[in-house]
Length: 257
Length: 275
Image (spheres, rainbow over the protein chains, first blue to last red):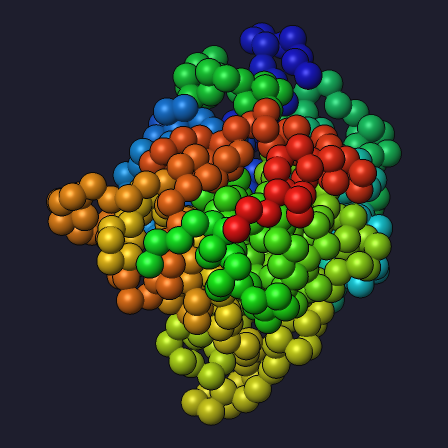
């Protein structure tokens, strides 16, 4: 999983650095289940480019958990070592306000060209071929300022033309009924994508070092917009890596879980 | 009243209970001793209501064939994997899934606790397929204040809630450690509440930290003392989750035969009924 450039880094560390750069000082971010990666990204952002960022770590209700250390489960008691702790019902209440959450980290077993995410049934709803766990709070992405979608799988099973079930709504084809800004960024082990402001379709933004355009297109079940010029995703700096490794001694971002 | 887990399930969870709510979040604070007793006694429930993110407790009840319908927003094991028994039951259509989201669960329990006839949900939630998948739980009505269309959902009033906390005193006042997730809401909304605790509260313990005593005894039907009774899930304030134990379940429960073996090896066969 590691690529030799200047410093060795893992795919997880690269993705965390990408997500950290997307966050701005003073914003409020939230994430759900299996969220060690965006939690690490938020902590990294707080310590580098986005001081004063707030983040709410999933079902724990922890606000700005100190991640000492980063943990795998979003409800781990160690997350409560934090700047503040909200009760879970209070977190779910204020997610509905619509003017509070700037960035919602989402994901799915299926993700489509409009940024819809599915964590529920794959295949027919009443007789699914794969019963996903369920979307938890994903319907609330429609109330957030913008949505960052992350996935540790980049293949045609995950990135599909249309999701079979909308857990987290993206840009509906042909219309925009979202209250927030909708999906803004997709981060995968191969690339990053953003969304075209006219068509609301996913558009390739950067390729990770060593990844080819053909490889991304082969691994994606929809045809992303390909801009004339594709940049390479910036690799994590030694300072960023030092911070991430300080948070993550057990190597969750390096394939340790 | 303090009961053994056997007495609590025998007396307070009738066969065919309409709506059973089970507390905890992910692999934390699952009231496993009570759940194991439900399996041992083969107590079937018409509908299981999970917290916004359920794990082993729900998967075990579903795998044991005790649940006709499950109302849930998530059953899984986070980084450890998908829920094997839930997958098997849903993919073979052996169980009806009432797909909910965390808002429908939490606001629905709030409505149940407060006697609200239904709940109105924030605009935008109608864009997910959750509401269209469950026409009997969600409706769209006209907001009498704005005349706009608004998504509403049913209140949730569990017949029985089973939850976990760190300790309780002799009057049933319940004392939490760490996060209490949606467990208090479940208790406030339910008609019968069974609380599994690690231990009896020590004398003066609740008086010393009244802010942690957030579920008063008049809302609690019975307390069951079950030290280390959440394992292999975590008990906030007492112990973390047993990852090898959870992985062992996930490995065995991949097949129906393996699931049966897990039930037998872990003392949940009907022959283990004691009281």
